[in-house]
Length: 189
Image (cartoon, rainbow, N blue to C red; front, side, top):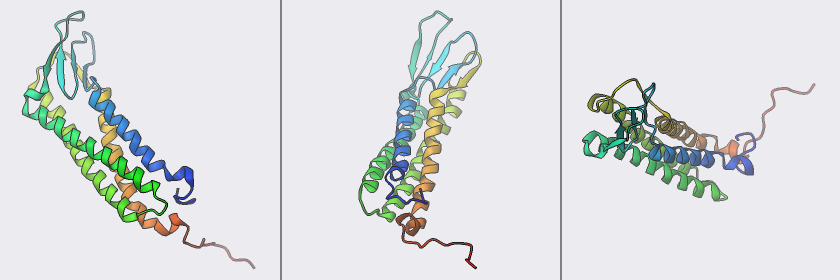
């Protein structure tokens, strides 16, 4: 991306595209029922960010309990949701920033800072959830934090990494815009 500059049309949209992928992963994490699942037979435990479900036996009916009745459940959901909303705002701002012909590099650095704030909120929710869930909800058998919880962590890691990219990008403003004359490391005889 630095070699061709952000005016190179295919490279210009890489960062907003990665933010969009992070938004999709966040939606999957928020909607997914696989935050916690039974690892071995009998499969009797299943949980999402919003509720915990269990059943007596393999063929039994699921009994679900809302996690919003617990203060930690509301805290975990609220902090992760705030992080996700900030990620969506960053995605919209990145689309606007990269759609303008003349890039505003201070604006891009602000998006990076906002991504770090989003990552802090997301990680807070991702730490509160397993710590309090495993201590306050009675679980049977061997359980594991599953695919939707993994998507949530992937979203948080993407927020951190993209925050670094957005913050460091203005440091290479001249190279990106093509204002620097290339340097050759050899001399002709």
